[in-house]
Image (cartoon, rainbow, N blue to C red; front, side, top):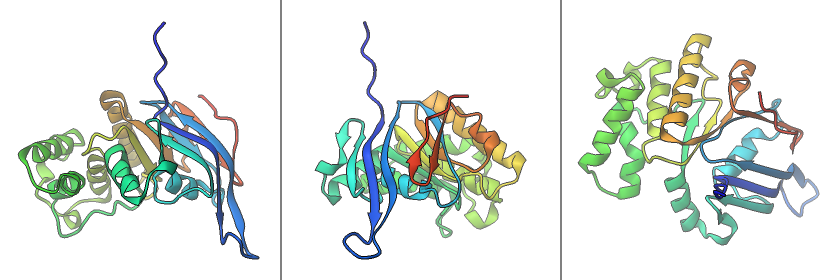
Length: 234
């Protein structure tokens, strides 16, 4: 019998509190247990104030949980120092935001190359070829030398998707990636993420308020008042 592949992400009893030890201490996340399989395409849904952004920051290794374990590719981040967390985040995670956060002084090609350049520390032809290929895949082969100000909102988000995949991360976190786009462009962006999920094997966890898009994911994970409801499979 073939062994089941371990999840790309596992959260065990994750709690997050702020102002710990003070009279105004507040717990935002209340014992989150979650596993995300390799190559899974899941939506994280829930009302505003439910703790979605806090949970995404913790999964993205931008904050540490107050209590609980986080394992990425089987590695317990609690055993890592800040340098180790930074290295793990750079190698294993891609980020797509509602606001694309492209660097305005750089071209589309340079923006896509940036994560690899930061990781490697020097320019090489391989990263340039990868960036050109990704931009072609998102329909921007003719825009490689354009700066963000010369691109539409939808085109900028396509660059952001290409940038998130530059390092071939096994897990991509997308925070309202279609929140600023009209419904037609949102559908195109969603389709691109789905295509990369299927063809490159990257797992995606997408925070979205759009029920249409969430319904098209493999699984919906709902967060209500800092607690996960049972995952829903369409």
